[in-house]
Amino acid sequence: MWTKIGPLLLALLLLQGCQLGRHWSDKEETLFVDYYKVACDDDAARLCYRSREKETNAWREDAAELVEFDQFEWGYRYQLKVETSFNSSGKAKKYRFLNIVKQEAVNSSDNAFALKLDTSTGIVYQSGAQWYLDDKVFTCNTDCTALTNIINNSLLTDLEFKAASNALTLETIKCSAGQDNYDEVCDGKSDVRWEIAHFRSDCGNADGELCLLYRLNSSDKWELLLVDIEGFEHQWGREFEIDVVETRSSANVVTAATLKQDDAAPTDRTGSANDFYMVVQGRLLEKSSGDKVTLYDSTDITLNCGNDCDRLDDYIGDDDWMLLKAYVDNSNLVLDSIACHAETLNLLRQCDENVDWDF
Image 1 (cartoon, rainbow, N blue to C red):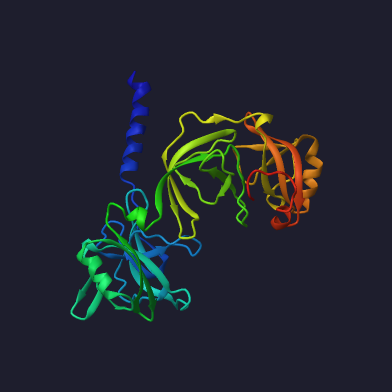
Image 2 (cartoon, rainbow, N blue to C red):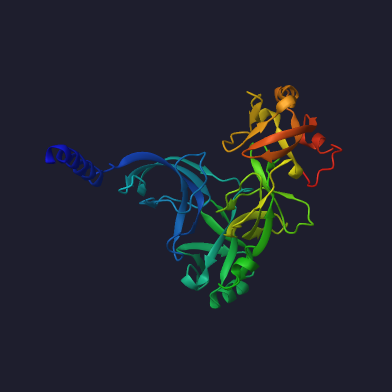
């Protein structure tokens, strides 16, 4: 028995030992640093850098700590050479500053930024005639008495600053509220119930994405939702009723949404009786193959174009915008008709079809 099992067991033990002992050596890398700091993700009483490893990446506020970068000046973006150390999973654990590769001043029209701060931590304070954000002196160009009241009451606050030539100026107190109602008062967050349509449509931008459609009541028109719902997984052919925490801007535009309660039994909207109109961009589609067209980069559903494949291919070749009438059949979309096509989205909006949502 040992002659059969022993070698295998020994190999497994050796493999586990190798994995446990795996080590990532420190490495010299490039790090980009933004022109202002934010309250640290793990300690709201300190300020941390906003950084990214590539210029094409989004700025991160929860990245690994950058140390020994004493040359930082507010109002400048940096390209740095750093020494990166890694944790046991191979993720960056700490960046150690080596030298500045590039320092660039932010344009005065783009140097404003807003910080959400918890004043109970002491991160904003006045000492004598000076105002401080952590250890950085700033000039108060707004209602400083109101700021004092915010601090005295330990409120959360949104403050808008400008940074230029290492000088920091408080321009506006955008909002302040207590811990219990800050999200509602300042962030525009609220609990709502949404109905989510059983189909998607082009978002109407250059990114080439298919957006969800939502509405508050069944009597309302569907609206394009230009943000993802965090935690929600959509299914073609299923209409959902879900509870979400939505965030709206001052212009009443949804800027974020997080799933709070999913629909355990979404309504079946498959079949030709549940047809719908959707918009697609021809430039983002490949011509049909086997009477089917893949929708953008989607891998979860294809469009069966049937007798309309030749027309569809022509419009795809012309990079036209198209309004399609379709329905979901099992795991595929079935094209009922090409309602309209046009060179631009604005021209497509002049289509006479009775579409029950605004695209």
